[in-house]
Image 1 (cartoon, rainbow, N blue to C red):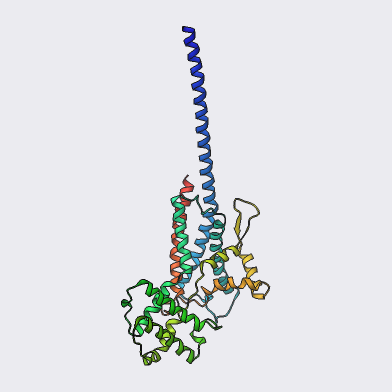
Image 2: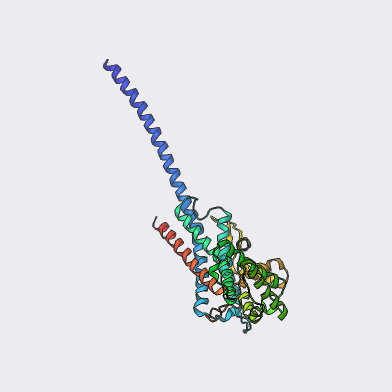
Length: 338
């Protein structure tokens, strides 16, 4: 009986120990895989957070300079062009294009700075989306334009209680503006003759009269035509989301080595492409440079110019860039402490 008890004890011990060892090995493998996944995730974050953070900071510095100086000569036309001014103009466009390139690069790789589902990754996406909106959205300008026209013609903006109706009114005023300016090489009120300007003002007044059932006297429209054209001539330079993606695609190149599939082209390559587009060799690429430059060309940040929507757009863009810097800065600090 004693011998049998010993044999059973040894058998049970071996079986239990074997199972315990198998379980411990399985748990260790799971832990190793989790650690490897976490390490990969941290490497992915570092791979994209660093260059995106630096691109945001670089553009922030330039926008802050533009806002603080308020009238930087290198953005204005008519001045004497020097090597330094040419550089400052082009580098301003490059800094924005570089940011769009890094945003496009990690989206092309589907990394989104973090594995999907992580709260801090979602926070980064929200910050980036706000930057894209600052560049692309102009609904506030359309709203302001409609509100100014209604006040000019003694219509009460508060009487439009339906949000959908308000959006429809603002959109149709914008459409009238595009119909008048769309085929002009000088896309502004300055490109309209007196008759065209009067027709545009009357077109807008007729639309509001019909939509709201209000009376806007012809004499009032005639006497306010120049003011109407000023409201309609608010300068805008939006870089729409698909344009942002296309500029980002233009900016990224396949990486020959390193942890990333893509890199963003350097300033020298950007300048080569810019000069080539101006010489006629790559005329199709010129539209991307034109759309970047439109945001900054002849931009005067002084408060007196209320008819340039780009002033508020630049301020909003800078604020959203600062927000992205905060999010990425916290992320990078946490990684450094890990």
